[in-house]
Each structure stands twice: as structure tokens, then as C-alpha cells.
Image (cartoon, rainbow, N blue to C red; front, side, top):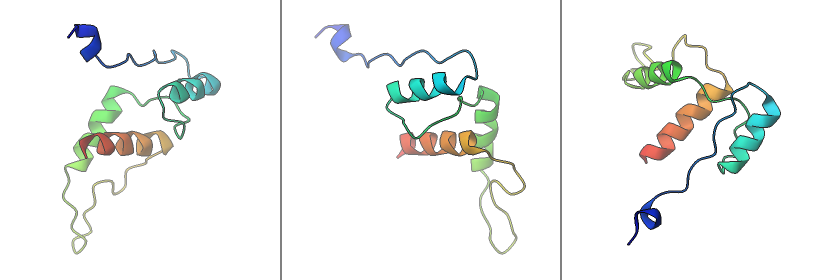
Length: 86
């Protein structure tokens, strides 16, 4: 078999601006029509991943995202990352 047959289709290149319409079109091309905002930066992605390592403890009031501001893009990023794991 050729290498081309084994490779995954290339993802569309991300828009370089924060233009909402460009990002909507990008997410549609990626098959993720529920996403509406620009992708969060890699630093924020690492922060979110680190928060997820926090073990919840209801009795002690410990939660991974306690007192952390999350916007829609952060939640969708977590959802996407979690979906890829399972």
C-alpha cells in the first residue's frame, strides 16, 4: 500500500484572525459545526489539561476547575480532548 492511502486527510488550515465567520467556516470544514470560536492557545490548553489532573473531593470542596473562569472555547476544547481519549 502507498503512504498516501494510509495517511489521514489534512485538516484545513486555521484562520489567522479572530474573525467569527472565518472560524465558523473552518469548524464546518473540520466537521465540528458546534464550535463557533477561535481555538484556544496551546498555553491555555496545557493549563486546562493540568486542572483535569486534580482529583475531585466533594467533602473537601476540591474540584478541577474551582475558581477557574472557563469560556465556551475552553469547554469545547476540553470536550474535544476528552472525546479523543475515549
